[in-house]
Image 1 (cartoon, helix red, strand yellow):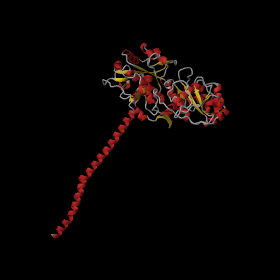
Image 2 (cartoon, one colour):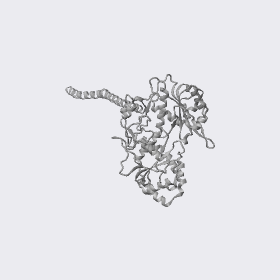
Image 3 (spheres, one colour):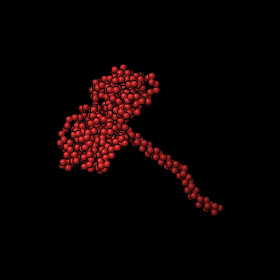
Image 4 (cartoon, helix red, strand yellow):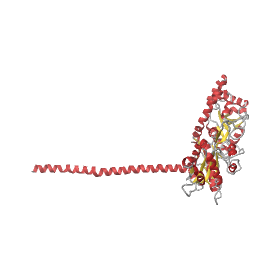
Amino acid sequence: TGGYRGVDCEDEPEEEDRHARRLILTTVLPAACVVALLALALFFLNRRARRRAAKLDALESAYARCMPATRRSDKATRRSVVIADSVVRVTNLQATAESAADTIVEAPPLATADERHVFLSHVWSSGQDQARAIKSALLERVKGIRVFLDVDDLADTSRLEEHVRNCSVVLVFLSGSSDLVGAPVSDYMRSPNCLRELRAAIELEKPIIVVTETDMRHGGVPLATHARQAPEGFRPLLDGTHRRLVVRWHRVGAFRLMSVLQIIEQFLEVGRSGAEGEEVSPAVYLPDRLLLARSPLPAGPTLDMPPLSAGEYHVYVSRENAGAPDLVALLQSHLNSGGTGEGGIASAAPRGLGAPAALRVTDDPRQMLRATHFLLLLGSRTTTPALFGELRTALANHPRLSIVLAHEQREGPAAAAFDQVIAGTPSDLTQAGIFHDLAVPILDAPHLKVSLRLLLHKLVSVPSVAHTASRFGELSMSRVDSGVGSSTSLLRRAYYRTASEHSASIFG
């Protein structure tokens, strides 16, 4: 009996240990797992909340900003723009965007769910893709805006007039095509449904914003073509007699941003017109890495020109290149005014500490080889033997010369298609590679300011073309004159293929 009692006494600690282990396995460990799972869930929920907050902050930072005219000059002095890392940056953007003087552009509230701020009227055949692009741009840049687009919101075409009535503003996107003989025609004015929308807007006295496609390869036709076929009440919006100008829609990079800015400005104008105590046309800008606002443009230095030795020049412009001297004068004015000048030639002398360096230009052929860049304006008057002779001299004798191409696309007789310019250029020059770099489009105002900034950027960061000069020597000896036809097609494809890539590399 005593032996059995001893065994029982020895087993008691083991039983207690087993009981403790069971207690840990059944209560403590599950509780610890629950706590760990709760902590993990809180971690992921917190991270998700931070991501949502970051996304909301990104949306807020993309919205257009509105600046009252009373603070316009005061705020302009607080901005400075510099060129760095191939983009133009606003140095104190956060402080400017959050200033009490600046407000986010926000659409007014609507009374019912059926109402929209903007009705997008367009023709499907040639305008549907860009109508979608305009809607996306407005949603990105104007807080709370609601846009009617037929492919998203239209279920019954018999209710077109009702939808127009429920919108505050009608945006008409004009596009066209060519008929069987190649003559331009207005697809918009030939569409019965588009004309229904347009007539309803006129009868209901809705404010109308007119946007026209400019790319001739994708529905761009002259504005006069649309005007000839337009209803009587719509023609004043197209012939320049109306106070609101037609917005020219450009598809590429910075030019597209400028078109979007014009649309937002007109949306604000028609929304605030006549409101007591409000500005009819407030100053609007986009708080992007590149500040493309027309008003106010940032004051102060826009870029630093590369330093030169005595007797050297940034740009050579040929007197034989019609229109190029005037373009250089615009560049001078734009640079010296900090991007705010529209016309007139500003003084090239520095204006004190922090003023932009002068653009040193020469048109003397004897000083051509002392310039770092040769500005070549491509247009209908580019193909002159004297200009071709200067290009051959420069390429053969200046191994570090950079040719900066500008393509004249403003309305007038000087404009010419790129294919036409290439076809009129001698084959030895095309084979030498003078068209390998992408030409900057020179557009009408207000997009002209974007063109000037692109050109100034090239004067800072154009790559060396030393290989061009060496190749030119070989090609000019062999005189390969059979390459015009084949090289034209190749250059045309390269020109159009790299246009959007080049803009994206500069403007993000």
